[in-house]
Image (cartoon, rainbow, N blue to C red; front, side, top):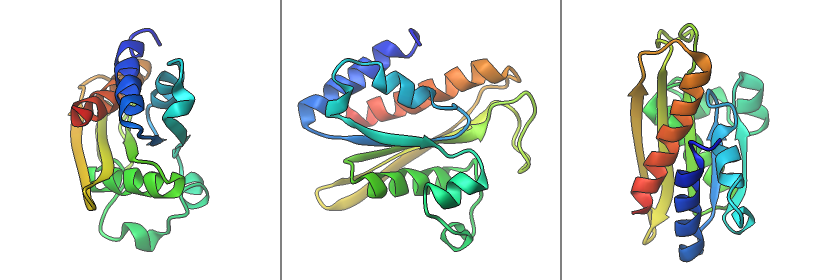
Length: 164
């Protein structure tokens, strides 16, 4: 956890200073994003909740999404990450939504993505206008645990950069 704590603290400080909150949807990082954000003292001032949306049951049950909601997209893509970031933000009524979706390994996923592939996204509303940003990371690694750490770091780095 120590490798994520400095970044999570920086994010927490920014969110607290702005009076903003966050909700997290993650899959292949397995809860590391939420754990890092919650490890920061004062996290209750900005962290509202999250979920590891790993399988279809979580997608339907926790997120309340249907196949119609993802028409034309699939998991482990930037559009899907944006959808889940926005969905979590809306469900938890937070300022920000953060999502990670990928394939940690040691093999790829059923969609043809190699191990080490993830997409991360943030979503918010700025001056009444929806804003989202996403990016893809390809680590080239098949090491499941290392990919999980790298995926969490990528998501937190994206959020931190958007927060300014």
